[in-house]
Length: 373
Image 1: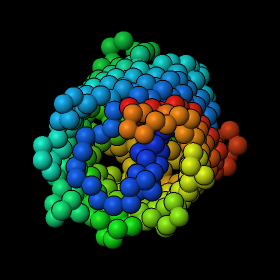
Image 2: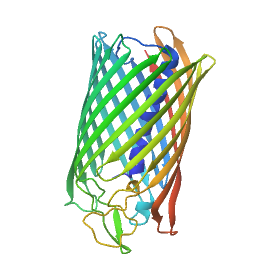
Image 3: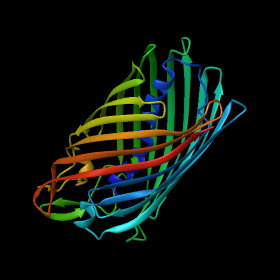
Image 4: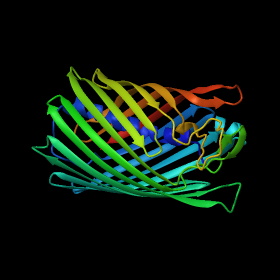
């Protein structure tokens, strides 16, 4: 099973593209439009994440095509080749390598002021298989000035252990989404999104160990968890082909974790063919109820997963897009490169090799070619 860091990293490229794409759309349009299907698009991407002893890299492909101006079909393929020598691994086991592949198929249907989307997803690793389907509906009101979105995802994970053939377990996930987007002025857009996730089943890592009185024991996590996240965002067109955004996200769950994320970004066209984006992100969370760096008593639940500890991170990133070819009304091709530097500082997770609080830097790089047609 790949490390949590690698899994988070594998999702970052898509998240970054969506954020930057929203800024780019605002710069290009600068106002409200009737609801439309996503653009016909083809993308080829290569990503690399390196940090904390984990390296994850691989290609990704995306193709989207609309039919009769009412239906859009999409498919994507993503690969992570993970080399894992994270602190969890090197202090309790041997470094390993594995590959994760994922597939995503989707269909969108536009009817009047509504857009309905259905997608299915599968991700495979040697000891972890995740399947999910999602349904989303968005509707525009008040002359396309207000958009309300509802979403639901149902997922099932199958967990195994390479070193123990008899080990087999599962995790079920239910995710509910509610979003509101409002055009405030011809140059300003605001949104609020609420997400609720309910988990049931095996919510740990069969390879991870905790510490009790200095001795290693298998971690024991609760088999249920409910989390909520509220995200607020404002995007503004500053004029002269400049845009800025600010967003805040608050997360809390039944494991007593509370987290805050603050991000600001800026986007600017340079000439007619270059678009530059920059952003910075701050993240801070407290630890889970049952987390302990080295427990001094035996409890029902115990974990030394550093992602459940108190820590903070700081990220700084940038992206540069170049429009290589453009034929108005026919197609447009862009070459895009982005990089992000992230610093992680853990408050109560000790590097047992040094006896000091653990910290590390990570880099995320992505290069891709995207074409609309």
